[in-house]
Length: 100
Image (tube, rainbow, N blue to C red; front, top):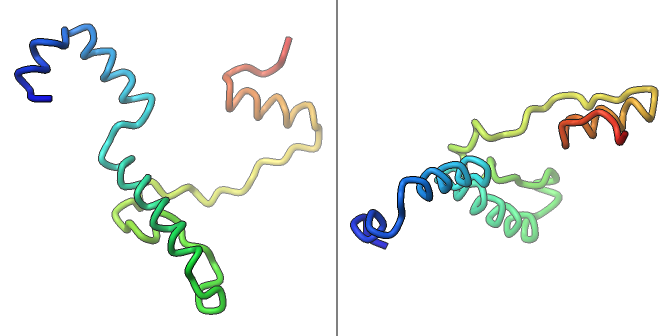
């Protein structure tokens, strides 16, 4: 779609909605590179010699400028209480600490 056509067909409210969706869904060049890196790493991993390269490749290994998107190597948080562990996971994933 051309810029002129887009300006005719998309009003400012819809444009703001698309900006919000873009922020939530990850419509960016970096995300496109990450998606391509995932596919490329999968192809490498299927065809790699596991003796020469025992560790599987990830997207950052095949798209080197994605280093900012590399996951932190943080230690997992393991609690002794199973309920507390579940509440922590629920809060991290869904923003609430318990079912009730």
